[in-house]
Image 1 (cartoon, rainbow, N blue to C red):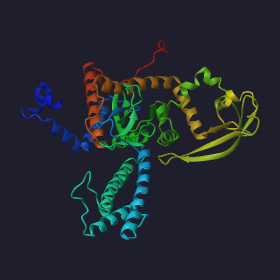
Image 2 (cartoon, one colour; image 1 turned 180 degrees about the vertical axis):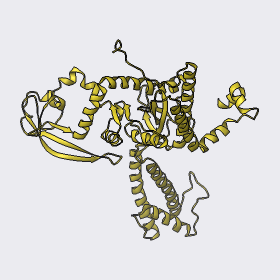
Image 3 (cartoon, rainbow, N blue to C red; image 1 turned 120 degrees about the horizontal axis):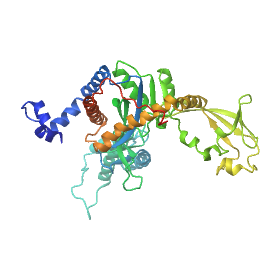
Image 4 (cartoon, one colour; image 1 turned 120 degrees about the vertical axis):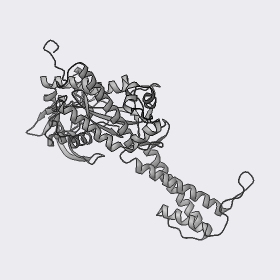
Length: 451
């Protein structure tokens, strides 16, 4: 399409000034080779927007979406299946090396499978025998040495392939054969209604006054792990830092709250479960710790039947990114087995006694965030997040029908996405110039009548 526009569009032909229009391969090659330059150009544009007074430089909004990869939809590789196949392959290699030792009188090592296969292949080549049969098929038997050589080559290729898959899937559970950086994710546009997973990338945008001022392409299916790298990259590239941050519950994690606190950024993040806690069903659920009484002096919860859930132990865990969290476990010591409200309190749990888990540090961050988002300023900020951050994706995905990448690989995908962000910022600036709104950063105000 760009090649066609360079030949037919009056604006682009004037820019070319009579020079030959580039073809699509030249455009593709330029994008692949100059990713860093395009990234630098993106932030130069943001700096220029800031000098024009188009940015508030105060609050940043983040949201994410998933865009399908160029890879085939059935090119999946699953980590669990690969690990299982690798274990089976190890057993087959042991049998193969054992057969080689018995048949040829060798002593090949069973522990190092790579070394064992390489040694077997080299020693078979040194026998001087024909390792590749001249005729194959029905009625033509192959010798034992030829069979060993054939199986050794097959196992060696599989071993290298499985190891490559697992090394490419560090921190992920899936990948695509034709685009190893893509992860299989569940998309919203599920036309078959069967929950089909597709190779995709998780795209993040940071928006200020309707302009995309930061972006990140990630292979992670979750949003909460993308906040810190996205903000770090943006702050390293800009000459100012934001003092407020707003996002939905997908970015709610202790690590994110702690990072924002260290950076001196006020976090307007909706806690997970915020919408459920407002419902009557949640407030009447006697099994929820939020509906129990907490005795700070005795450090215990008291259920509706007056039984104490005493502090039992502290559990420390590390997530897949190496971040450590501490959880306090409270458990009732007696009375749960014969309690008349057991079915309402413990539902279908087969545990003998009621148990609840509390992360005090995360609970403190949740209280702070709840106070911020329920204030008048917080309500207005959340409305602006829906308008600005989600509006950016609506423009690119719905209005421009951008649903699938043309490039593969993380660098190519990130560069292609940056070009889309540059285009959106340019169109928005042009519209504001036409309306004579330059110098007045956009921020939707909730009037008293609306409130």
